[in-house]
Image (cartoon, rainbow, N blue to C red; front, side, top):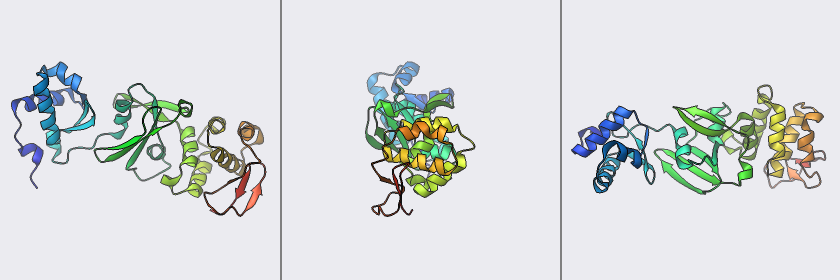
Length: 264
């Protein structure tokens, strides 16, 4: 197959855009930046962007933001660093990057996920950008806690910290193979994390079953009653949840955590 991007005809306007993006070493660019750099008329700028998108030199992130794929990268372009996308979609910072991508980031999951979950306070939708599926999950602002900023190529990205990621993993364990694996990972991480912080995060998590499961696993791993006290106070022991997701509610009852200890 011929290299479409290097053999296709580029008109002078397109060449100017490509040259400036290469000079700026830009990965992500907005139409406003292109206007500042090049001073094309609005009509010419629109046509030029459209043509560069059709030739896969630019890839659309949102209405006026694009990912630049240099022409020397071949007909399929280069993959964007997925961590750079959330700040573009949520410039007000009302989000955090969580779930499977962070499981991989902290070493809980070996495989690189094909889905990126962005928990935020405004948008519920999903979209493909490049080869990655972005799931935008709307949650109450009270769910956005236990986060920190990391620096990716000079861009600040808001992500769940390690302790919050473990709480999320017990709530959403599918990417690591289910709750049994999630419990094992949690136990293995106890020597590397701030357990009191984990308990605090868990006690504030809105899903009761998740709080009970975390409490049960921490107690079985030898975490002290004093440390677990805030988490124990947060649960209703008289409403029973199952330790593992199942319609089968047969098993011994752990009265301390209000759990039916069923089979995995």
